[in-house]
Amino acid sequence: MKFLDEAKVYIRSGDGGAGAVSFRREKFIEFGGPDGGDGGRGGDVWVEAVNGLNTLIDFRYQQHFKGQIGTHGMGRNRTGANGAPVTLKVPVGTQVFEEDNETLICDLTAEGQKFRIAKGGNGGFGNAHFKSSTNQAPDWANPGLPGEEKTIWLRLKLIADAGLVGLPNAGKSTFLATCTRARPKIANYPFTTLHPNLGVATVDGREFVLADIPGLIEGAHEGVGIGDRFLGHVERTRVLLHLVSAQEEEVGKAYRTVAHELEAYGAGLTEKPEIVALSQIDVLDEKDVKKKAKELEKACGKPVFLISAATNKGMTEVLRALRDIIVETAPPEREPPPPAGDDDFSDRGDYDDDNRK
Image (tube, rainbow, N blue to C red; front, side, top):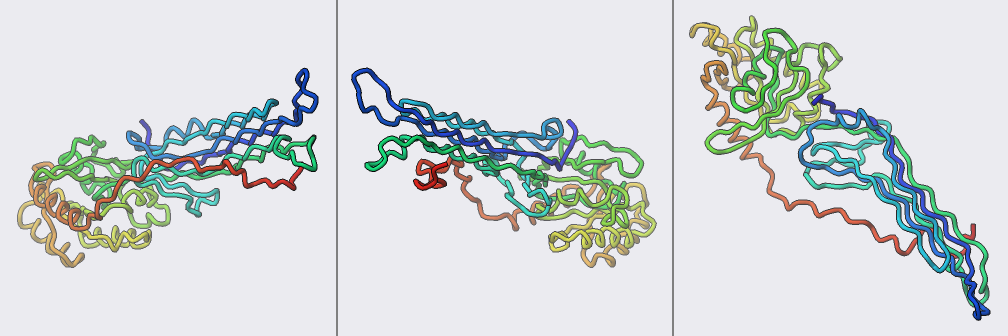
């Protein structure tokens, strides 16, 4: 399945059905009076976060979603049926923006969350609604109100506990494949990873989700290389694991390059807890590893883990460090969101008795 994390969609809720103009005509009933029913409501447009999806690829093949039009009212005081709603099913972590791609409408961060993004039009009153002591035979009815239409943007930000960042070929995909069941593409050339990957790591019986994003290079915030568009997928993580390859000539410069790109991107990434690890240490002798580890510690100002995903050296220690931070920063458990119910529109407050046409 292809990965797509942004999609542009046109939506339109259904129009309300028109009220009916009808008069009761039955044999032996001289004064039948008006009996035109009200129109039905148009269908709403909802967006819902569901389990089992991790991409917006479905919206590449269908970009138009329309709620059903409400049925018109009929004689004998028969109210028209409400139009069927339409629901956009999206992965957990999806944000919905207005057409300007900046104004946030809603952020669906939990399975089952549901939000109405376009309200269906109310149905019009039939002529039976306007009957009164001074007007016993009204011959008019209201048309249904039009639905709402807009263009929206869907933007997916994967939800993970920890994020892997670093230069291309820093060993992020190998790290993910070693400690999880994910099978990202691994090769000895830059930008092997072209889209984010998720995996579930387990250490001491505790599971947490790791997110691997394509490598960053100098100038990524200006669009160099793949750019920084995938950094949005680590915005929701609670800790970052910064991998620096031991094969780099200047490991301190490699660390500062990625740190600068994280700072330029913003979104609070530099404020997250960070664990720094010197990866791929199996390719160097012990003396060179110690030298580069010291250089890296000076650049980042914190202790550095020494790991090799190929030989599994140091992997357990760094996973435990990630787990400890995830546990410490875990938010208090919340009750699942209640199912979204339909609002009560029985009062049809959008019309008043003086609105004749």
